[in-house]
Length: 392
Image 1 (spheres, one colour):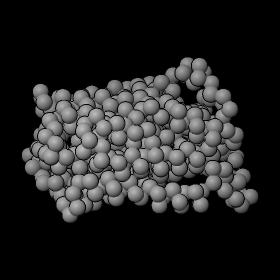
Image 2 (cartoon, helix red, strand yellow):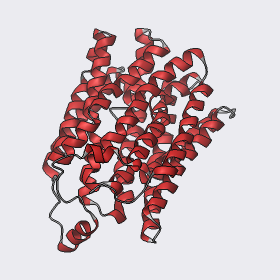
Image 3 (cartoon, helix red, strand yellow):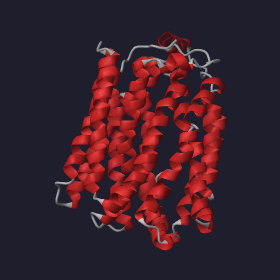
């Protein structure tokens, strides 16, 4: 919710402050400047200190940054960029911390489903943020989305502190045997073997594929409401509501993909094969549907293409996003931080580049770049990835 509210609020904000597309792209990308800084650091902290502490810290940090965003915007563009970067710093530790917690609790036979379920919370957060932001803006003005969404973090933190343990909960003996028997990340990592990690081709497959995947994903995340408003001529409320459909589709298909992947593993298909199948869908599906956007003639078909693109993208949760725990469960947080650093760089460059492309070209040019990277990612992933454990 805190991440997507700017994609709606940027429309009235750009009108009020007279921002051009390049400035809008700069603002949208500023979140990723901070997000980039804490990916690897967040993974190290999570693997050494535990995911509970690190994730709790991150949520409090980014919630405060969200609340102060309207104040920063009134002071000027540099202050707004700084506030968004601070928010990114807090959010940067979230995914590595989540990966750390899941690697401790979830056996391999349930890995894809559990990760998909957690990530579907992110998609449903996008749905909620995109649905309620236009309503709040219409009734209370654009600052209200930052004040209201940011305040929710304090409520979440109270529940997090009281309900979750960084260590394994007090399960029954059978549950302990199931988790410990299939999961090798029993102890915290004391030292990170960077040279060994960076010498492995599957790690680089993760890094490159994550970059290629996130270029398209973050363009849609940040620019979709603008596309609906400028190209499809939807008003602010319609833009927010129609943006909900692709993220709702992702929430559903992430869980469908997780169930399919775990079922295939349980039936004896190798983890490597399953990861390659699921991630190929996560790349080639969005590539196909983005190529159709330039050919459709009605807003309804454009929205449908967006929804199908995002829905097939969600199969990546059972592909590259599950693979960190496959190849190095003890270093799952670090590996996620490492690959997501590349993913965030794609967000930084892709979001900013989209603004410049639109000043000189068209939306078709934006989609062509994303499709090309999806195809590169498909090739790299299928040549070099593996589902086998390569790091002890």
